[in-house]
Length: 216
Ligand code: ADP
Ligand code: 5GP
Image (cartoon, rainbow, N blue to C red; front, side, top):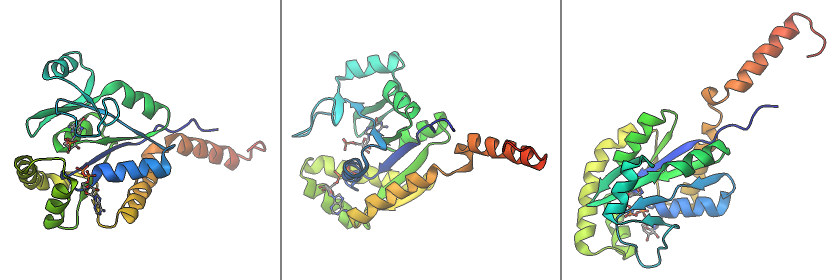
């Protein structure tokens, strides 16, 4: 029997307010056993309802810089004046256990992950149009006007990097979008480069069968 395949490292990026968090939450609700969500560290303040260790590990700037020094992060980036980073240990452990690990991170982090893990699957989430993005950001009600403007302006910069991603996910109908993300990730498991053990086995069997061995 083949060994359990290592999980797929999935990077989900997208404009702030495009619906990344909503998609991931729904994906985990529906298919929780296949996935592990990496919880990032950040220096931004918790939003109402956010809990330390659930949405993020909330850190002071000093604590975050210690994590950088101790090489505890796969990647980190500054995003609109705050640090965000992916703790290394959990990601490695979950990939090894065969889970598909989701990193919900911005574009600079995504590019570092791709350098370190060339097989990572990069998905970029966008709303159907820009006015919808603004409406969703405002509608979420978690940021003041100044922060919303900064995030929209950051979105304009981020749009220049969409071509670096493998798939574009248009989050219009949430239900369809979640199923689409799930099926893209599942298809990724079928890539030949992830099936080396299977390929080697069947080559070996074919060699033996063509030699007329009975035991195959
Ligand atoms: P992000 O994590 O990308 O910043 P969120 O998941 O917080 O974005 O979504 C931003 C807002 O848009 C939230 O209020 C969320 O409920 C809403 N939203 C997300 N997806 C959809 C969708 N497909 N249709 C309508 N509203 C959505
Ligand atoms: P928010 O403050 O809305 O939770 O996140 C702001 C941005 O930071 C989002 O684009 C989110 O994907 C990104 N982000 C969250 N965690 C990480 C991380 O660990 N590393 C990087 N590079 N970006 C992150």
